[in-house]
Length: 325
Image 1 (cartoon, rainbow, N blue to C red):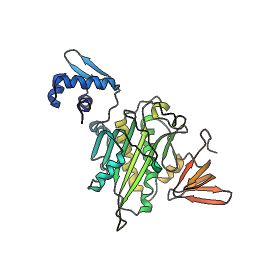
Image 2 (tube, rainbow, N blue to C red):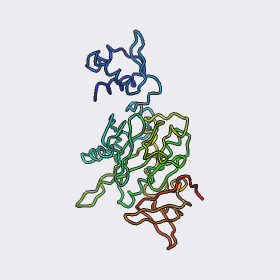
Image 3 (cartoon, rainbow, N blue to C red):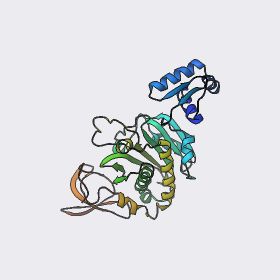
Image 4 (cartoon, rainbow, N blue to C red):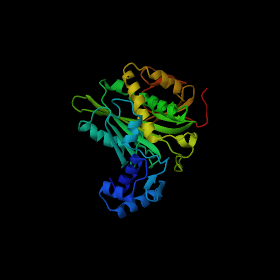
């Protein structure tokens, strides 16, 4: 961890003015190194006041993710019991997958302030700038067959939607199967990847990745009109550490329902596709249909002029601005 990052996390954890001398002594660096770190942090946009005879203090509202702040809100006993937090990763899913191979326990939480190679489904890039969103992965080890494990994406979508609603007072909807929506714009997504032992075909682990746009933000040209953030849609300020903890809390509540599928009732209620015209994309196949239901396995039921189809994979798109019937 760089001196800049160490200074940042120390100021957040102390939550009071800390002298340059104390910072230097605690971190084992020179006071000049501390001053340079403070200058860099200010350049990055962090508001740090310098109090005469007292030291440096991080202003309130500086939303920095730390383990202590996550644990402040964490009630789950398994999800997040162990955690790894990084300033930047290529991908939290990649790190969680590597950890799962070396025996990481169920519930390991991997968090990054930013991702240089964040991914969505089908290899798409997930926009992951620093100080703006929640980028997290959980290592899960469900004792179920692969067909049941496929429900985890739907379960996680409900957990994340509940967490956002609880903190922001919103009404998040779910676009089958893995997208979270606010006001007809995408605010987050789920990427669930299974790790299977090649010879036995035994399900060793599921890596659950969740990305949510939190702070008010400007999106790249290709995402404008498609993506949004919690901060862009509501006035309530949401702490990223609090949101991470609440997602873990909700996952712990819902995870025992994986086999029964009880959570799917809420997934249907939150659906923003049922009753709407959709475009279905499966491989090279592309056709228009009407989404009519989500069944007990989390599959999407659609109707076409040729009849009813059941989708357990693939992708659907909606016309923005079109409301449910």
